[in-house]
Length: 175
Image 1 (cartoon, helix red, strand yellow):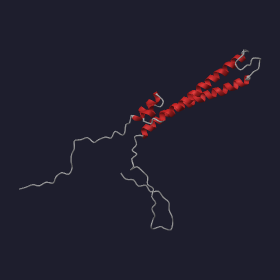
Image 2 (cartoon, one colour; image 1 turned 30 degrees about the vertical axis):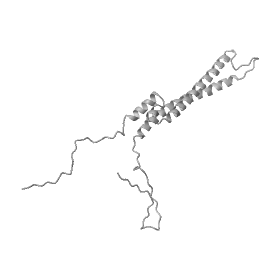
Image 3 (cartoon, helix red, strand yellow; image 1 turned 45 degrees about the horizontal axis):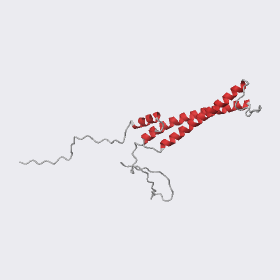
Image 4 (cartoon, helix red, strand yellow; image 1 turned 90 degrees about the vertical axis):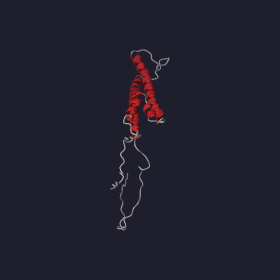
């Protein structure tokens, strides 16, 4: 007596499924950390090297304007204090001519203080923005963007209703 059996079509494997290394949940936090420590560091970590000089230029510009406005504010403030005490200042001429009036010194202080504070605020905002940009970019780098994820518009006519034109959207997806 012979017993015949069909071969088993299910192959049992002891191998673990391969997990793709595309998704790294720590990548956005590393990019944000590097940007917080060194502005532009997160952009370099994300291999977006062209963004780092933009970050440096933006933050450097706000630092430049902060220092310039602060120095000018100090000049006008010192001149105002000297003039209010009756002493000569840098805006007085040799023969008693006044180049800038006392009210001009006060107005200059107000404008320069406002510009200095706006420069500081813009620098802080740019610093925070580059941290957020590095983190978001690290998140977006992990998305799958192959050619199967594309939109192909097509026009289809309904043979039953050729008289009345219709407009619509049809989404078709496959995995």
